[in-house]
Image (cartoon, rainbow, N blue to C red; front, side, top):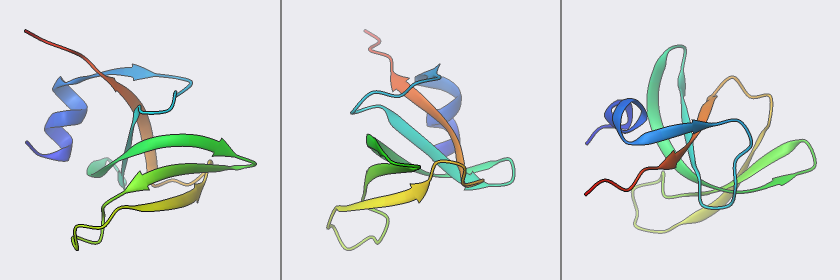
Length: 79
């Protein structure tokens, strides 16, 4: 499953994310990355990220106004 497919089919958009929700990131209109929301920290969004491909998970922060943040979603459980 690609990041774009996950964005389109397996989530419910949310306005105010909760810990464990998904953050969709990308460039322009493309969804290129998915991470797990942790919390708001001042004017930043803190999230869990395995972006590096090394198998390690990092806690990262982006400004809440970053154009890379495309939206938040909540996983839907489907039978």
